[in-house]
Picture 1 (cartoon, rainbow, N blue to C red):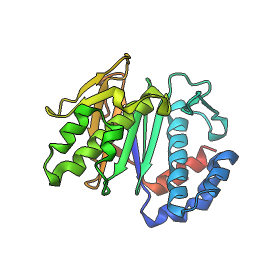
Picture 2 (cartoon, one colour):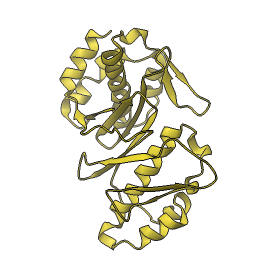
Picture 3 (tube, helix red, strand yellow):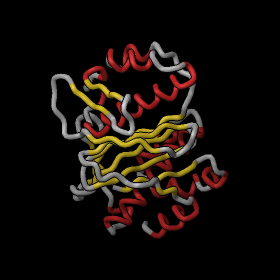
Length: 232
């Protein structure tokens, strides 16, 4: 497993935007054009370019040869590369990409004020009770710990919103061990790891095994632009 990250708040990120549009598909460019906010388009573009850069490096193919397909729930995969699995996420200034030889899920979230009543809808009763028992100064961090873990699992499973968020639970009372239980179904995705990439963010990865990346590799934007141009 490898995990990569790009800080899109750096001035050069926006400066390379137009040139990087040539690295993505026509469909992706059209989708980016529909974003109302420039920062959303920047994150979306870098997520796609970062994934393509990693795929070309690992598979030793050109960017133009990459063909994506999607399952019934919208989870993407690469045609003709069954052993190359990936997942991307972005929030705030960060774009992250995880790749492995088994399917996986990654989620990153910027810490922002939240109405904790949301937890009644998206957390199991056990999770919500644990959340509300937290001290007020740590409750926000705990919320996003749970949220990113749950999102990473949903993304690994690849079933989208058809997977009820209350049907599985995390117990964080004995961290670094992360307790995980499901109700009414079995799953292969039962290994989790949290990463500290930034004090203002939470990030989690879900995998089928415990051979997690030891660190998150931060990618230099200039390097990404130069190397992705050579991969065309």
